[in-house]
Image 1 (spheres, rainbow, N blue to C red):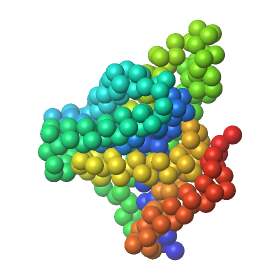
Image 2 (image 1 turned 135 degrees about the vertical axis):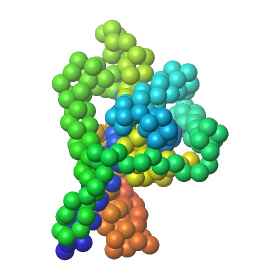
Image 3 (image 1 turned 45 degrees about the vertical axis):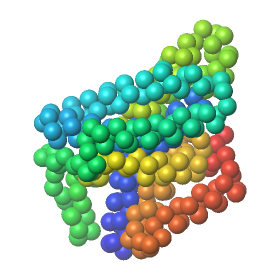
Length: 285
């Protein structure tokens, strides 16, 4: 029983990493209707930038995270303004090919800049250590990750439900032609949403860098689970993404403990069942 409780808490922290990356993927799809295969690569870039600012340059941890978000957000702005914007009116297959191309480009770029060996910055001193949970040491850093995930969920709810920008984004997602007709600057909304999604992915990578390392290709591993989450929760649905992140994170943790060989088996089974019974996702309207 103690093992189950402890592993559940471990799964909760994993769920928050997944929530951060799937939240960005969800809002980009919800507004722009783009399935961004390169979203995991933005997670990877965020991890490398956090390593550089904190582990190499020695900046304060919070400032390093902020700079990694701004750097990845700038990259997202260039991707949207310079490339994706040209493909909004063509077949979706071209968008998929372009974002897949971004994966290859960014993977090679990080190898060129940081090398092919994984990087890991030191643990921030104020987040180091552990405390006792059911007789076992539970890392303080995991509590920090859980708190960040819950805070981001609250801020996103406030942003999309209680602010003018959130209402504009939802109106654009519902009908971009009508939104444009009433004076909303749709291209600017698209850029803002894509940058926000990129920064969410970077946040997951940045806060994960002291424990999950930065390495070429880590984005591909994360994006698979993020897509599973968006399928289970419903494409473009933030509440669904949050609940599905909890399901996938906790099940992955229990799978690692009890069925290490079939760690992802149950998650794919759940996704398959959802696709068969409710293909639009558990929380789709």
